[in-house]
Amino acid sequence: MTNETRQAPARMAGLHHHPFSATELRARRRELIKALGEDAVLLVPAAPEVIRNRDVHHPFRQSSDLSWLTGFPEPEALAVLAPKRKEGAFVLFCRPQDPEREIWDGHRYGVEGAVEHFGADQAFPMTELDQRLPEFLADRRRVVYPLGLDDVFDRRVIGWVRAVRAQARKGISAPTELVSSDQYLHERRLIKSTSELKVMRRAAEISALAHQRLMQSAQPGSSEQQLEATFLTACAEQGARFQAYQPIVGSGANACVLHYVKNDGILRDGDLVLVDAGCELDGYASDITRTFPANGRFSPAQRRLYDLVLKAQLAAIAKIRVGNHWNQPHKAALKVLTQGLVDLGLIKAEGAALKQLIKDERYKPFFMHKTGHWLGMDVHDVGQYKQNGRWRRFEPGMVLTVEPGLYIAPDAEAPAEYRGIGIRIEDDLLVTDREPEVLSAKVPTDPDEIEALMALPATATAA
Ligand code: GLY
Ligand code: MN
Ligand code: MN
Image (cartoon, rainbow, N blue to C red; front, top):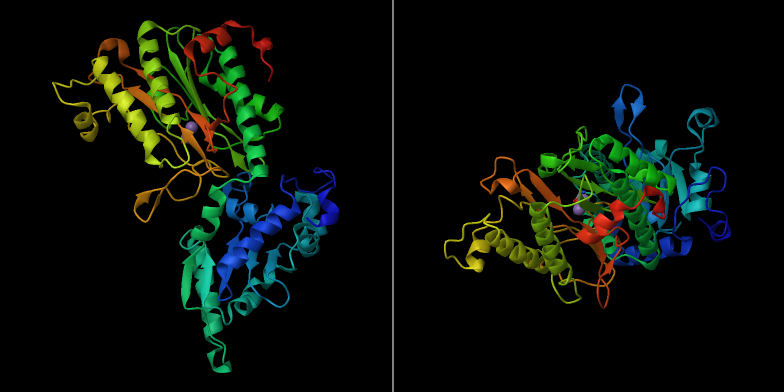
């Protein structure tokens, strides 16, 4: 977007809405151009369109990298950052306008729109890509791009390098290094800006309120699919049409299947229900899990396990402090869970110390995933967890999930009252200079509060 259009209503006819000012996007590119240096060129392709069946496509979702860098929403596009280029460093290749096609598929920005609305110094139609791209690689040492992400694109890059090499006798030198763009783009995406956080707060709030509504609608006899529909509707009504991932709605033992997405069971009286669902808003994910009793009251055995998972989650959250490292929350959760499993008779310690039980991974039959991940444009967001072989330290602006769980399979070696119970509690946390901010706090995790919420008539929530 240019300065002139920045103030225009976000949903102006045909124009794509994105929440970042032209100034912010320009600053992201400027910083990146500086980091690349004069002997590198960066290529960031659009996501491919994916066929669902015959002539039906999956909903198009732009590549997070391209979105973050340009805000450009269309498929069949490529952004180039070429530092110190005479005609300007930022070039967009995109689909040309096509009145005939646009009657069917809607507005396209075209090359003029790429310059006018997205601040490209120059734009060219995608049809000219093979002809023009070698010029951008000429006399650059490094080609920086999503190396190894897509076979077809990898081969195209090598083709362009070869085309430059063919001109060696004219004194033009070809790139000698292909470099992954991850270290340039992903480390920057890991630290969220004020405007990104505004979107992420809202995404988490929408999902939290949708979880509330779902919980209040649930009762024995409801179908998992109905609960999913309630969640999707609540998100869509609040402006979030897409989900960050497929919702998981597992009642009873279905909750023990970690990536359960069939969502075709019926809630029985006495079941717990695990719902892991989060909307995507303006390209940013939320990721929330709540576990609640179908009939609105935890049984004593369910409550014991639930309290343990919650205690582990709170212990993990308490470790999210600037200066602490990535694995500390996980370690804190393991400590609480392992001790709790011993106390409840699910681990037979036989005199072994807690440390040894953790080292031997005795929690593993009941807790087999990590306690969290980075969260951002992608639900399992980018950014390294280790640097130079060491766990990375927390910094303000990082967003992560904290999601311990316990999954006691129906055939587990465990007291009968615990078998077939799956519990996970997942929140979205922002690292700050002080206590972390819980972005997903609008839906309770406290079991008494969950019971109180479920006892209210559904209309009482502010969704
Ligand atoms: N919903 C995916 C996850 O929790 O990581
Ligand atoms: Mn998660
Ligand atoms: Mn999740």
